Image 1 (cartoon, rainbow, N blue to C red):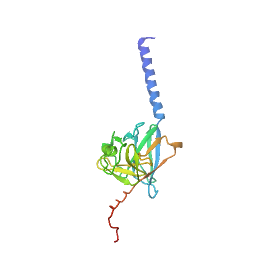
Image 2: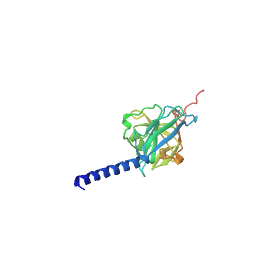
Image 3: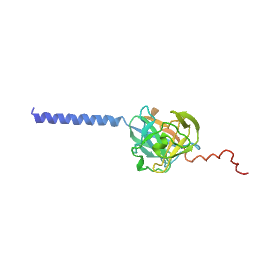
Image 4: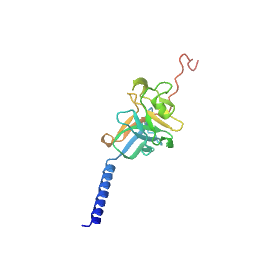
Length: 203
């Protein structure tokens, strides 16, 4: 066999190997299915955007991937295709928008979540407001809100959900049994608490 023929065969084998590797990677990807429901009414929420951000292993940190997103239909269903297996932080908004500033945004959500929002989360996503009040607990060396949520407005327009532990809500792909994951989101801001000593309404 001539050298040119050997080189051609080697090239073909390399191409086939690369194609096989790529095909295996795509086969390991999954469709992420979720149903968005209102946290208060438990009714489906249409036209809301869901974004998945791969979580950094062992750290309260994630990077927003704007290709891993979808908008809910009239039944609140969202389908995000071609998601690699792993753990993802859940972000959402009600406008359905996808701000350019979110692409590749690194979000660090450890550290204190104090009333002034001088926290790792606020530093990552600019000033945040509470979307749903929860219990104040100690998380990652500081104060956090458990069973609540935050909203980052301005250039990002995204919301976050906190767990009972005070961390941001995450999901795993693939989900158990491949069934859609039900995610409760907040569609209305919690009314502000009156200051102590303020007169009650109606008096």
